[in-house]
Length: 293
Image 1 (cartoon, rainbow, N blue to C red):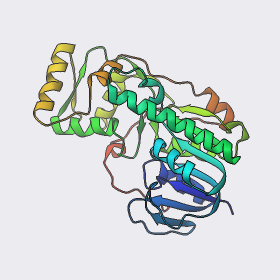
Image 2 (cartoon, rainbow, N blue to C red; image 1 turned 90 degrees about the vertical axis):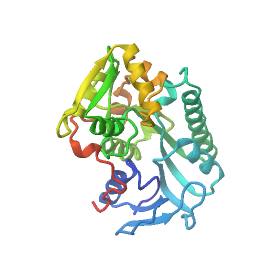
Image 3 (tube, one colour; image 1 turned 45 degrees about the vertical axis):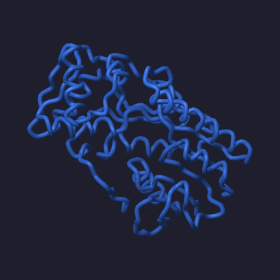
Image 4 (tube, one colour; image 1 turned 90 degrees about the horizontal axis):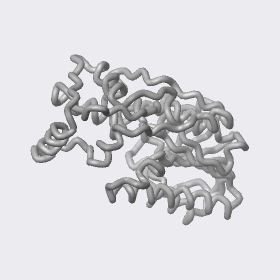
């Protein structure tokens, strides 16, 4: 029986990955900051990348579904034997590299250094590493973009966007990401590779938001404003303590295409993400998910 160690097992990507691993006969040791109950084939450790007791000495594969930079540091310092390492990063490593926002540039830098660290440590240990870069993640009510949009739209009864927010996006469901991590674990073609993992449909930012709003009851109104009015509305919300999480750089990206090619992942491990067909439950915030599958 193969044995996997999963970091971020209680996260939005980690939980469906646990179900896939167990469903295919893997024994799983998972790490979570929250206390969890063991299930057949699944043993939980309470901790994080900085501190987790009881880690196995050897596993067949390590999966990281949490912060890439923290995982890279842990992996370099750990002495666990594993021939296969699969870690999630983000397409932000490219899209935020040249951002006008210093915080976003720092995110891109830490992602890049994390990738380099995982590959460097893996090579030194004779382990095959793969980095997976999702785009806009959704599906578990725990993402910071589409679920946040749904939350604000519920509160306000409407959601403002700047006019011409037509930059293309490819939102990707958490189950497709978990499936990609599982599918590539035994594929030699994925060794030492980095893959963008976009969703199965390209659509303008405005249309993506409209589909999210259409799932809510009653559907909030999408309000498109000239840029000066939108910036004023954003500033007013911030003054009122109703932060949107949007900065100037994020607003500018709404008009830019952020699209990625699925061909390498499709070729090497059969990646076939779904179209963007959201439902209201995908944006309901949840503290825990069901790993009993």
